Image 1 (tube, one colour):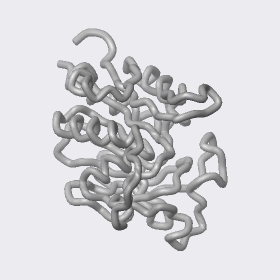
Image 2 (cartoon, one colour; image 1 turned 90 degrees about the horizontal axis):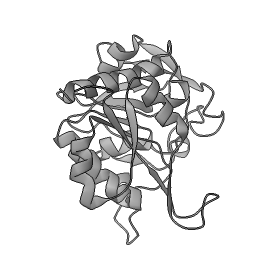
Image 3 (spheres, helix red, strand yellow; image 1 turned 45 degrees about the vertical axis):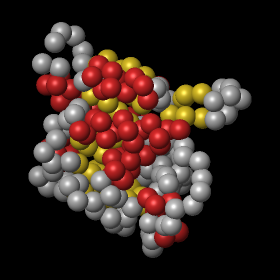
Image 4 (cartoon, one colour; image 1 turned 90 degrees about the vertical axis):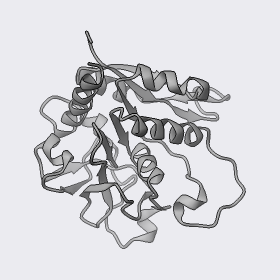
Length: 240
């Protein structure tokens, strides 16, 4: 392989908004900037189910980003109710499963991490601030451009090897949180209140999920930047 490895970035979905009153894709520039600075070639991935196989084959690695949309009731450990499945959820679950099955490097961020865990049997709190005793807001006390709380990283984990840290400060912008540890998934980081902040999949080339948003701090010298560099490095090995 020559040149930069191709890193797909799944688009988020809006049924309407300030950009258009009609359904459209949307994603923050920071994801593309982080992948590019880390040495990858970022490309946007739309929800084309018929093209899923070609997308996975064409990408050396994939980022599944944050997003604000509800999971099915069963993922919260509740009885299923009749309801419409979110377009992003319908596509992202298939994409993520395909990436894991094909051992394609994947970095799940916030909602992307949660989908990775949910596919392995994870259940979630709908609102961690109301369902756990915690003094950490986790959602909107501070803007995502500011660090909000510390996390403890499991020594010897992939995340610890990537960042070189057993503790670091992170931003936060999430309502839901992983309630359990699914089989086949290693929890590699927690907030001081016990909320799961990171997961990884042993035995995979690179399958890492983080609850925070490292794209806001993906500058050389930052441990968040090393997360994107590690994804790109793993993607390079797939393309050989």
